[in-house]
Image 1: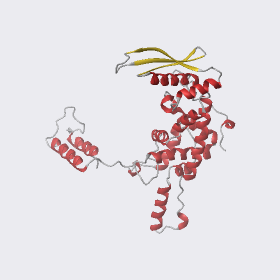
Image 2: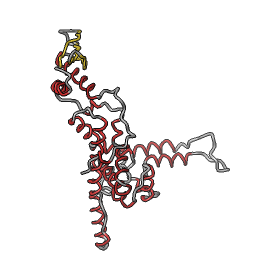
Image 3: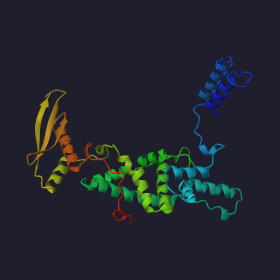
Image 4: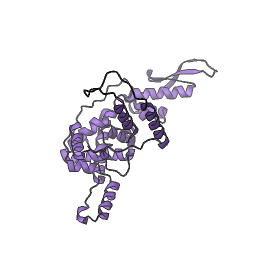
Length: 321
């Protein structure tokens, strides 16, 4: 019995009850309550932190009902056998087959499916849609930037975070508990694959848009992708757009020749100010100004037009092949 349950039992026993069976409003704790709570706390501290227990070990757990509720929470129609397969890791399937074999169950009954195929299918669908969405939403960002942003959305960290908040942790059949970030991310990909088989690829695309692409909301894109050589890239972009040669100019400085020196640099092209930046020296300020100019040209500033998370990209614009 856990520490919290023990405390609840103790407090319940400590409540004074009158002859009618109702709890009195005035509480008088028995003198044995305090020593008992101290002893329980001492035992918990001695044994160390309690290991997390999966919800599937509780008496009232109904896995089929949980699967049905999972689909309804997401407002999606899943085939329950497919959804169950999406939550079954290969290691768990092999472990279950070995357990059944030891119990003498016939080989024909050892058909425990795993989610490897659904993971591959879901990963392919998610990658195709995310890349198409980023390309459509940020058309002025170069390919290297679009690739970096798409990689962020498809990273294990992002996918596992989305998967965890969707409530997959307690539904996963795995040999480990709690499941690792890789397991959570793979499960989300398998769910996308199961949704495509259950309701069609279009619904899977909308699922990716609603739960993965929305991770860009209120995100500073500069935290995801920062140009490594901003001056060279800015010069290349200006030449491509016929904006002229770039020209850094010192706009001001303060605290020169001190440890608190600050320089203000502007980047010009054809007498037009493209960006401004500050730094402890001219080189740093120039680099910051170049990044600011690139943000303006690529429409990556924080005050840019918000992402459209209600857009429905046409299937022909999403390359699955």
